[in-house]
Image (cartoon, rainbow, N blue to C red):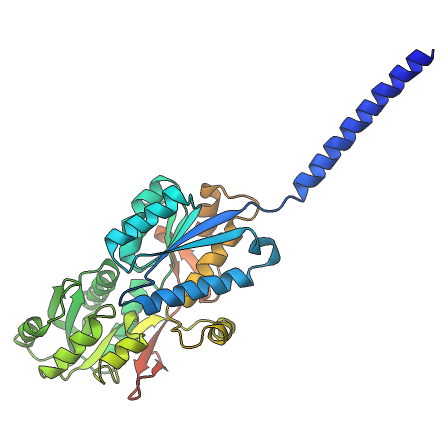
Length: 371
């Protein structure tokens, strides 16, 4: 009898232990920390565009610090410098993917994004590119662009040209996917609506620093009342100085990359009164926090990089499956980010607010009322 009682008690104890173990396991699972997630960021931290790259890195670091507590400890970022050189973009990206085994990518510029989109796409790596060219994300499932749409920036510039009676324009652009996408958008609007004619359009390599012959060729095609140079720092100030030196007096109008204090200074006044289209200013909260911590840095693309980090953090709470992350990004609507109110559009592109700015006589960048 005692033996039977002991057997029954033993079985009961085993059953209770099993039930408790299962309950504890379920409890631990339900309160498990969200999965860790490593993001690789390829930025131009050196070279003539390093001012932009330093802003991008600073904004990502700010975002890491301001993540909610449940995300702050699990999100890690590894930075790599490509100097905005495509061969270095590829090596930086491969290092992040092959050695660091990152779960996602943030890249800066269309050229960098295009250099890496093929490999990141093939590996189902979510990839947010601060880039203009729609080709970056076209036909892809895991690659997205998070910058002002080229057609929206072109719309701003076209409206300005028409409102100011600038009927004859000359375009001079570097061979770069992002800037050429904006040029193509402007050409499309002009062809469709008229009111502005492109008198001359030239394109040069990113190694060119002597623009005199091409500017002379443009001048022979007729007078212009708006000169649109489309370059990154290192070429922009040189091009506008040489154009002014050759007697091009037309107002300078352009896009995005004018917002660089070193380039404005290097232009020696040639960019004074220039007008350009770019992404709208970040929210006041982001501007306050960023400038308090990183005094002297430009805000250009800062809010975009900040938002990219936040979106990847939000998309990976509880599940880091790449298809789920991509689906979250693709379905985003009215996201209130540092860049304003943002929504996903067709082709894995995000629509962000745009604006016009001008450079005053002292070299300061100011907002300009949209025509």
